[in-house]
Image (tube, rainbow, N blue to C red):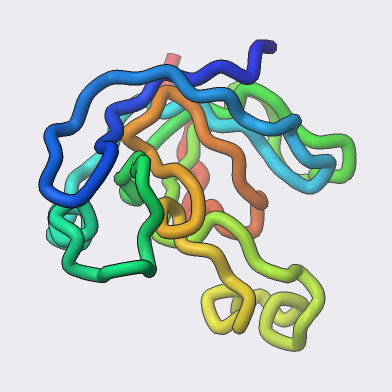
Length: 143
């Protein structure tokens, strides 16, 4: 699978969102690749696009953190997910995976957590990579 994604992004605060191409790094062995099927928009997305949070968010920015998608690739150490699973995504993309919070299933309290689009790119793209422990829900596949 190619590492090229298409995304709605903005180059700076208060600039319009435009579709652009971006290249992702290789999928990590502890990550899944999710094809985004839909994404909500939150007030925090709008505030970030408008530069309200200062240096917390980097530009160019691909906002979006309320995504729903389908797992299309799985890193070699990932367990509990299969290609084709439908999943819901939240505000976090990555954590350390080793602190007391991460190992007890409370990743949201990890001091090294990464927000979905603050340090990276969000769900206004056609695909994202993230650690499976941060998937907010898994849904029955509807055929």
